[in-house]
Structure formats: C-alpha cells, structure tokens
Length: 177
Ligand code: IMP
Image (cartoon, rainbow, N blue to C red):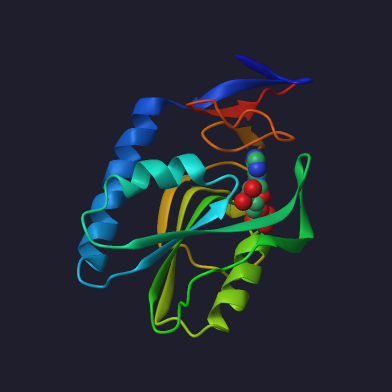
C-alpha cells in the first residue's frame, strides 16, 4: 500500500506488466511508422514516464516534442482545458502520435485533436497508457492503448494525486473505504 497525502492507494499494475505492454505497443507502432518520420507529442505532465519508456522501444526515426495541458483538479476532470505550454513545431503534413498518460472523459483529447487539426497534420494517432472506457463522454478512438481500467482514480508512473505520486514506478488505485 502507498499513502499519498491523505489517501491510501493499492497496487493495480506492476512494473513487469507495464514493461511488457509497452514493449508490445512499441513493436506495433514501429511497424506502422517505420518510414513515416512522425512527430511524437508528449502531453505533460502525466505522460513523461510512459513517453520515456515507449520511446526507447521505437525502431524508427522520429522527432519528440511536448505540450502542456491542464484540465484535472484534485481528483476530478473539468471540461475546461488550458494550454500551458504550446506547440513549437510545424506539424503541417506530418504524421503525429500523441502520447498521453490516461484518457478519462476524453475532454482533453477532444480539445487537443480539434486544436492540432487546425495545423493540418497528415494524420494523428493516439497512444495512451491507460483508458477508462466507462468515463468516456467524447467520440474518440484510441489507436494504441496500454490498459483499459475501471472508472477509479489512479496514481503513479507519471500520474498524480494533487501533484504527488508521479515518481511511483508502478500504477496504484485509490483504496476503497
Ligand atoms: P480527461 O480530459 O477527463 O480525459 O482527463 C485527462 C487528464 O486527466 C489526464 O491527462 C490526466 O492528467 C488526468 N486524469 C484523468 N484520470 C486520472 C486519474 O485517475 N489519475 C490521475 N490523473 C487523471
């Protein structure tokens, strides 16, 4: 068990499972993108660990950049997405792969897709480590998903509870009372 601030969390996905799944996703992505010179967009803050690990499995030439978005407050998603750090690269005509930690309601991803499409990329794929299908309220299709999870709050491996817990190497879920 892990205690983060005022909450207790129990382990949901261990390091070995995370590594194995990332390896599989990396192989899949490598097959599709081997001659496409894509640009990989990591969404900060939550994706930094997933991005770092999946990048090492990719066997093709690519560029990497970051966007910083904010929509979550404490333990719930808000409709309003804020762009804190914007796109620096020209993505016109490029193949874009978004790397996200988790898709929950899909609000962030929906906002991001609308925003990126204005820059006329060749196409956009979504890679997310975690996905909560029961929380999804937007019409989004995910191309590469690590794990589908229940509609529970998770932390670790980049994901936070109120800014804490990102450094945990495995994924933890809020302990039920
Ligand atoms: P969405 O806009 O509701 O899909 O939420 C996306 C963002 O909310 C993610 O990028 C995370 O930063 C955050 N988020 C969603 N669910 C969780 C969770 O269970 N734990 C921690 N952060 C989460």
